[in-house]
Image (cartoon, rainbow, N blue to C red; front, top):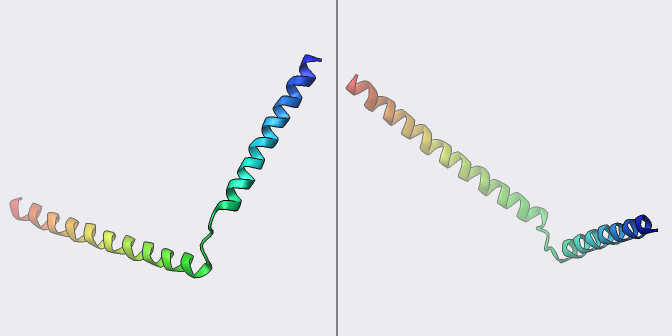
Length: 69
């Protein structure tokens, strides 16, 4: 008897958990395809800029290292 009650309680908790997830996902404002594209391009541009900065920094430091060797 006790085990059946425990199983029912666990099932209720699981059901409540998934219902909560479903309710929260309904509240989410999902971005449109246009927004996703815009944010993706912005991220790629930012990554390219950062990559260029570190490449330039690496080149500059290697030149400085060669001068002192």
